[in-house]
Image (cartoon, rainbow over all chains, first blue to last red; front, side, top):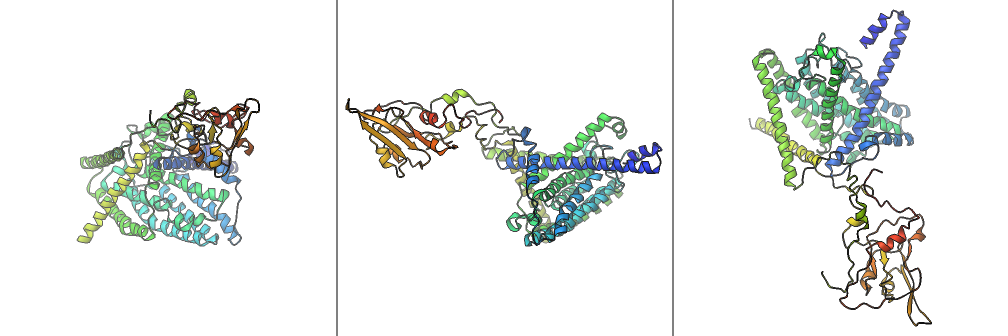
Length: 434
Length: 186
């Protein structure tokens, strides 16, 4: 944005023309970011359904478009055709407004989420603070929808959601604070000249903040848990617990308004993954490529974009995978997890991190050794995990099958088999066995 | 002190159990789904994947029928109609019509058990959705034909493949039948 503004100012068109052109540019960028976020959300819906299918030994949607990737368009079209219903006793204007507030809360945060180096709508110097603040608007929307629906299920869902988001914002913010302390900046992306959270990390895993020291690794776990809870996703989806509340705050919604909530939820999944990538996993940093080199080359920046999206995609997969693994928590368990475990541990991490920064000078041998040890122990955990996966497959007597897309047995049909007789038909009082 | 130990033990336990739960679900990413993509992406036509004794739509090999009408008598809902007439000239009993109302049939299999010659049997065909219910009145005799002799004990007769009679009836060449080809995308 600053780049566009500087370019327009350089043209010397006078203040009016510059302002109008800049406003138009802002609109174009906003529309582009919105569309990208929308596409990501739609694609995530398909990914979620495919992963859910695999977890449940099914295949999932695979007919619309290649591997079913266009399923979300078909679903969206269906929802678009549905009747837009406002209950007679609902508070009309508030009922209509609520989904937009939820969408604004989530999609506005995309303005400050990097996709690659320099590929960020607005690299605010208070980026992460802005994101924390703007996503809270969604809470208002959810509470509004629950209240305006004039329905006990919706109201309970809305209230639960608010209680949950307000509670979990505490550990999320505290764990983010650890990273902010390390980077010394609230800026999401940053460049070599103005260091942000990504640009003060490195390309290699041991340069990432997640593996900076044991405290940040725990902070990442806390941030991730809290973010899942803030996104109202299983196992923290009490606001839409279908066994108790039908669909929670969006019970009364149909058609495109429902789609608004739905897309906001999935956009939020990408949003939290992108934030986690930015804060903890080195964002768009390429291993062994300096910031200056990446800033100079378009192709390197493209690689950076791919790296960022790949990291975020892995985290998105983890979110989806968690959803199809864990059962829902009770309300008291939810609150106990937050206030008895996450908040104290987040505080401990913050304090530990502060002490670490004071005691161990950055770049010293001890510092590096601790990075390597943290990275190595995480790698070890992953190996143990993969060993358990293999153990579970072997124990059930299954074989490995790497047809991850499960396209079905294509082209293996032999017409000759169709003509094959089903076997001799034996009269019933004939010999018993051949 | 005990409370503190319990606190951290609970955290450790939850990490181990949650991790193992994740390992179980992750392992399903690398297992074959059990879903069969009926009707168009199966390895074999589904009719040939069915168990040997599955009861599909009834069919009749008119060449084996002795005209005893045991099946029609056994049928609890009278969906089998068999007509046998004696030819005045040759004194030969002739099978003039065999009609099975597949829309009525409840697949109980009593007729199959009653048949002394194995002429009536369950095919493995099951795709009987039609635009016109009359097309499910399956007629297995076109022209009057002499009835078969009652079979001798322990004799074996090889008949046409299972389903070959009813398939002609259900899916005549000029009409579009259910998809008969697996493989390929839709």
